[in-house]
Image (cartoon, rainbow, N blue to C red; front, side, top):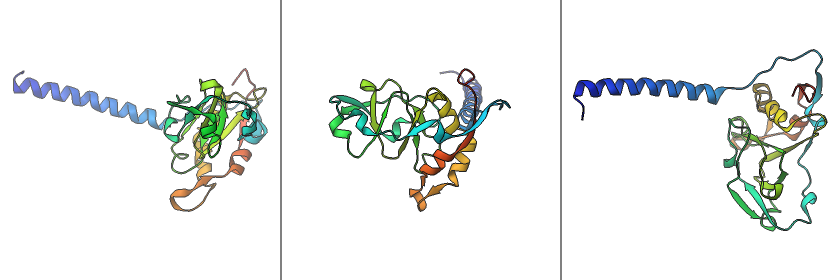
Amino acid sequence: LPPIEMQEQIVDELESYQKIIHGARQIVENYRPTMKVEASWKMVKLGDVIEINPKKTEVNNFDGYVSFVPMSDLNENNMYFYPNEQRKIHDVYMGYTYFMDGDVLLAKVTPCFENGKSGVAKGLVNGIGFGSSEFYVLRADIKQILPEFIYYVIHSNNFISQGKANMTGTGGLQRLTKDYVLNYIFFLPPIDEQ
């Protein structure tokens, strides 16, 4: 046990480090990437370069385990998420949202949407996932857009702030409209620039 004066010095030093950690955490939690738009990039609607909510019939003949992704597995500041659960497909086929490796998940319900809950599916059991019915699934037309670029588009301040004005429902049960997602216009660089 150091003398009281030294204890005070140690506490002061640790408190100053804690302030730095707190400030860094605020920066990370509020950071949204921005990019310089080039004149050669074309403007497109998101719906022109993605398929939204692919059909479950793609996996009708599959019988095995799949990843299960509740809303809590997505986070606000990380492109990739890691499913912690797997279930038999017949247990999740009805009532849950279907997706595959490479698809982008977007929370459509408040407050998850406003908080930026979204992510790119990767490393799913058998390449297949099911999860919350409150996800939109965005599948990239990979000749035009990378899944990671879709993530940056839907994670941008502009997409989220405009989306807040395009929610329907009342009170705490507001949802982002599918129409807003499909008609959102943005600048699309060529694949190599993405």
